[in-house]
Length: 456
Image (cartoon, rainbow, N blue to C red):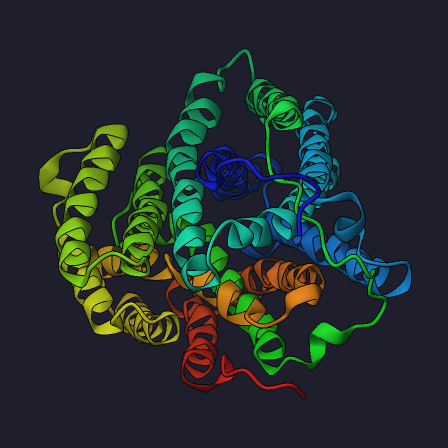
């Protein structure tokens, strides 16, 4: 259902991937902000993880307000359209970035948390609008493939942010003449301007004006779909686990029995964690597409090789240091083959591999434990896209409502890092990895049984 004849879906998808890139970039910067603000304000592990709590907690509040609106006055995006929703989200995120300047000026940790929440409110609207929008741009059978492709560009942003952000915040703008929190001022002004430019670009871009049903629904009917109900918790645990690992990765790499790295050096390895998600998502886009099987399995290692070289070039690290990552690439490729291009099966297999890697990180030491935890990014790669498409399958006119519920549960990224930070303060960073470990147990359940469609 469109208001006019849609333009090429391929060109529309190309426009939308810029959004996925930008929110991936700004989200991954939290992994740099967490140790940076920890040092500036002399915070504990628990207090430092309030960065993620504020950011992802705002996702919950924003999505909850959206859901309440959808069941009282009608679905907002069904009324205004996906395009206008996206523009609104971009403007809000830009405002949050600009608030970093006064936050640094007054050196207020609370002000920083408020600015992060504002960015997150904008990203909430973007997520609610853009994810189902991408799913609608083509056949339902290949929706997971398209979302993996878009998430691949999201992961490019995730990969670049630790390297660029680490350099700008920990080095370029951090000088003796510019102490304290001031080194975040200019970077976030630039990021805010980028969000505004995207909003202008989207405003004048020719995109199909998808809307919801002509009948505006005011009932929480989406919750009657079993696959969505269990999918809500799958999103909570997936996002919570991924963010927990990423947020505490620098602290993990600084441990004497792991790598004893400085923050600036550790940030380069964080790029491999998020870079692994990027590689896996592009491979997932191919694996879950309609290509011939032989073509898929020839193309996927080529994609992995090219993207590995890209990350290697961006981080400027020696090959002798990073070649271990290739082992995990090979295992990831094997996992895709075992998944047989089936979203639920692939999700289950990847969750099993992550649990094995986490156990290695918990009980191992040195390079083995270090690369096991970094390699988790490869297996996190397809989880969001697969969970999302499995959860909204069959929702039809309740898709936007279901999408708001799924985005609401990104709050897992607020809750699990706090719990992991508490455990890290109590018993050490190693054992804090038990927190995300339990999250992947639920993802195994969802991939085996929870995704199955049934109206409750």
